[in-house]
Amino acid sequence: MIKITPLPRYPMITIVVPAHNEEVVIAQTTRAILDMNYPADRVELLLYADNCADKTADEMRRALADPRYRSRNVKIIERTGSGAKAGVLNDALKIAHGDYIGVYDADAMPETNVLYFLVRKALENPERYVAVFGRNKTRYAQQNFLTKCINQEIVVTQRIQHCGIWHLFRIGRIPGTNFIIQRQYQKNGHWASDINSATDGDLFIAMALHQAARVWPKRAGYYRNLERHLTNDILAYEYNPHTRSLTVGDWATSKSKYYRLMRTSDVAPTFFDTFYQSSHDQRWRIVKDGMLDHLADLSAQHRTGLVPDFAWVTADSAEPVKPWTVASKNDGNYFANACRVPMMLANSKDPRAQKTLTRMMKFFSRRSYVSLRNSRLHTDREEAESSPISQL
Image 1: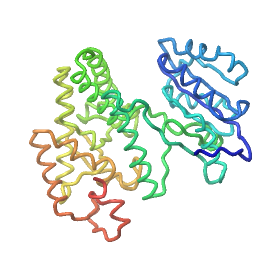
Image 2: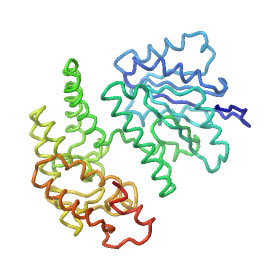
Image 3: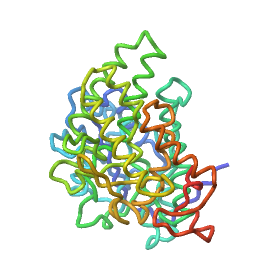
Image 4: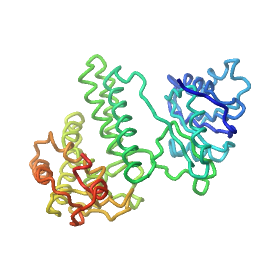
């Protein structure tokens, strides 16, 4: 049984909901937030209809027309600025009045007591617990192929990635929804990142849409249309023709220092073949050849055949990045991203993919523990940080 006891105090919470063309779900999300078990006068709700071409704002107003919510502190902002979700959050910081800022996606359905529990944890040690996030679950997880994929992503992200990183390194990672964070903690009054997408996520979504068209033929046209739009956007915003590779995200533009950065787990030859067969866009063949060449180059540079998480690439060369270039001291090692490379190569018949995969699997079969710095590992903690086996 859930035990609800009065909190020592109820800090003001500003909840921000970024919504882009979410007319189908935004009304129920709005109601769920306003119905949460937290004092109504201690909640400020900022609903952003961000560059919407549908009736998202109208649905927000329809939900607020309910007599139960007439006295609630809610603002609807019809936004036309840039920056997508990060832009919304930066705008919200300028007008938020809460001691904490909470964020929920437009399709979220927060449970009644979730805000109470987030605040209760934060108040245990406000100086130490700057941010608190809750567990996310997928509604209708088994309804169709897409919801199964979404559920799998959430389970892996929360139960393996978030928990694993915390237990190994005592590093907490805030998800994109269902969290609160102290407002004054934001650096220079801004959210740290305007990153809008990651290429690996876009690739998997596009491939899932392609598979959905096969599984549900009656809706095939709908899924293929979504796949076509997404793959076109990947080539438009996440492709560097000078390196013959995909960038790590649409934020790594030609003006960014990360324009030549390649994530090795983005080398997905079977995906690229599929997208070429669907679109007949020659750039997918260029991407496949370029990224497989870079991966083979990286594999040949180390006696184990292993590849790093990230590499700097040119048209005809590749070099592991240095520690802390992107996210951690292991950016140039075989770590959390590169551990997906065998999976991405396994179904490809391309000789380069098979050669790289064979070298890596021979290393795994010997069960040697070594980092890409050529230093043998001795302790359990070192193995957890850098060993390829622990990442599989």
